[in-house]
Structure formats: structure tokens, C-alpha cells
View 1 (cartoon, rainbow, N blue to C red):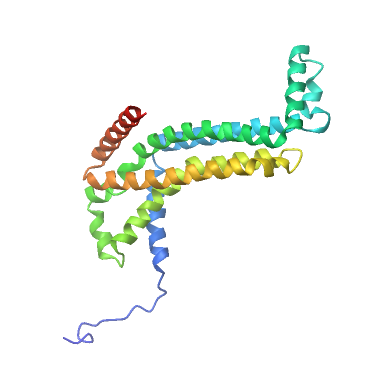
View 2 (view 1 turned 90 degrees about the vertical axis):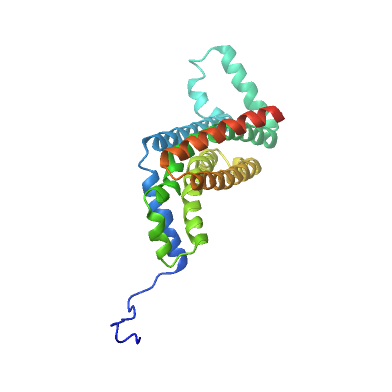
Length: 248
């Protein structure tokens, strides 16, 4: 049968690219996931720790400031033993800045890794039902299949949801703490000596965000109900913790 008989009209509007269509899936998924109050609380705690790291890095920079920075104004009100201890730490940092600065940043980034890993498990438990399980239970997957999207496009868009949230929870606070703390330091020495610690922390964060995002997608795809996806994730979390403890 001719297309003219069916009154077929070719689309004359502007067509969007494949990456724009994938971004639509990610944007809608983020909007849906961020409705969770638990997820918002976890993000606030993660950024709160990042702000705390920035404050500590700022105070460490004041020890290297000429005249003691802000500590010089409080020296008269502090006990003599505390002032002596602060002067000793400042002299040590001035003598070995490359070791002290790198060690300081690396120590707090290591603590942040443990905190953000636990926070990531809590966050995924909050948004894992909103990934694939939500589309399966609401039959929205049929609408996705009717569009000009492949399964790879759909999974890539959903991966973007989980990866973006985990990066906002883990990677961005570390970058913010490093940048603000180093920017408010007395010199560029903080940027140079702490950059290797930043690269290590970012490598761990990006690898963890990628692997956890893939695991969250796999578990969400196994559940046809949103409540079941959370149960599956908690079970996998506890099982992995027991296995890792046994291996250690």
C-alpha cells in the first residue's frame, strides 16, 4: 500500500542526536532519584565532610603562613604548651613540606574513601529501585523500546544516573575540598605537593563509582518490583561484606 494513501507525512522538525536522547533518560532518572529524602541527606553528609576537610586544609596552610597566620592572633590566649606544640608542627611542615602536605591530604582522603564507600551503599539502596526496576514494574520499559533507542542506549542512560549521583557524593566533594583548601593556602606549594594525593583519591573514587553503578544496574534489572530491588541490594551488600571479611 502506498504511503500517500495512508497520509504519511515526513517529520519536518528538528531531530536530536543519540546522545541527547541518552541524556534525557539520565536527566529524568536523576530527577526521579533525587526525590528521595534519604539520598538528599546522604549527599548533604558527604558534602559536609568535604567542607570539613577544606577547613582542616586551610588551617594547615595557616601554619605555613608568615607569622603563623590566624594562629598568631590567638597565641596570647592559648596555653604555652599548646603554642609550643603548634610551633613545633609548623617548623616540621616548613622543613618537610612535600612529605607533610602530601601525607596530610592522603590521610584525610583515605578516611574519606571509607566514609564515602559506606555512604554510597546507603545512597544506592535509596535510588536502586528507581533505575530499571521502576520501569519494569510500571511497564515504562515498553515505551522506551518503542522509541529510537537500543538496549545499549537505555542502559547507558541509566548508568549515567547512578554514576552521576555517586560522583556527586564521592568525587566532587574531594575535588572541592582539595581546591578550596589549596586555594586558601599561603602559596602554590599546596597545589603541587597535594596533587598526587588528589589523583590517587580520584582514581579510587572513579573506579568505585563505575563498579558500583554497574552492580546497581544489575541488581535493579533482576527485580520486577521496586521494593525487591532494595532487598536485593541490601542482601548483596551484607554478603559482600562477609566475603571480604573472610578473605582478609
